[in-house]
Length: 257
Image (cartoon, rainbow, N blue to C red; front, side, top):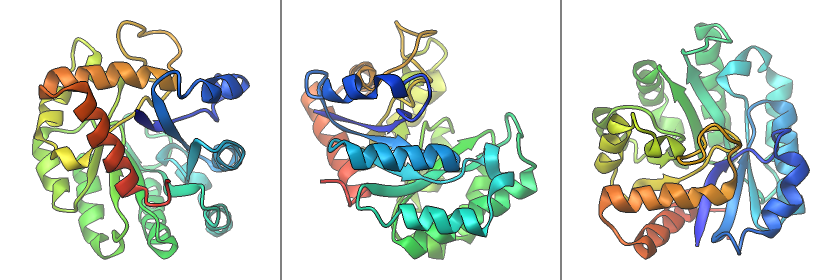
């Protein structure tokens, strides 16, 4: 059985189907999934869904796109949501220099503040880093004393060299549908560099749909295609990939059953 370590059933495209999606988890080879917030409304919804469904967990936080909305009151609300045992991490937080929807200085400030908040709450951080790996490296190493509960680089798109750098922080790395794309050479090289005890799988649904469904809506069940590609790249049997990634996910997100 697999765990989809990063999905967005709180997205308006998937929310109407949440009942059916989650009821099909076992038939789809899924043990559970983690629903991730990116702003306060989506974080509220992720926590609500996790409370409703036994096999769903939540991560709450403010994405770099929405860093301009981060303030003390929002952090207080994140802390309140995190009192639920079904909330297993803080995220997705980080830096996104591709779109720059929030000024970079504000992104950096919200990133640092949420790292410290996660430490106060005793929870791991789930990172969204896009075209900003060097600045993320600097912030993470400066904030190293607050990284006591685990670090996950979601949808990892950095180099194999940065795998070695972030591994100094005992970071985990999650890979999704992008590893099935035709232009995925550098993603595959990075995956090969990740220690097996730090590898996770995800869909990031409804985004990042794997081949052969690229261009269509993504679903948690399609993490099976990500797992198949990981088996091929790492030359490991399917049972081993399932065991490794499930154990890693539960080790990182210690509130998961």
